[in-house]
Amino acid sequence: MRMKEMVRRTGVHERLLRYYEQQGLLAPTRLPSGYREYSEADVETVRRIRSLLTAGLSTSVIAQVLPCVADAGDRLVPTCPELVRRLHGERQRITREIEALRASRAMLDTVLDAVPPALAR
View 1: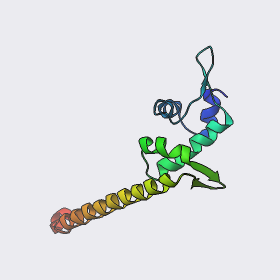
View 2: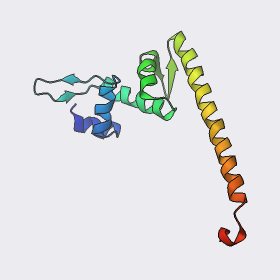
View 3: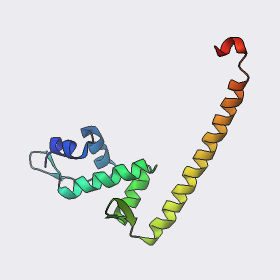
């Protein structure tokens, strides 16, 4: 399928599809005319990429993870032992970021609690 059909099927903009290709996440066939030709497998790959992005992984991490995940219905399942360690590390990183955001929010709450009544209106 061509780019327009891929956009329609995945809901992903052309620019993002090109970006995924630049990052090595997607490898459509190139026709002699230079047009990209996507397969059904590419549709599934884009779905996996979107799921992993939603999980908080960067495209550089996804490039390492993508070959080691398989679909199991509505979820992705790791297929490589080293991937499990990597995902635990990513989960710890996300947890640290959440904790830092909570601390930032608490500090902001402290500042907002000190707003004089005349400014609070």
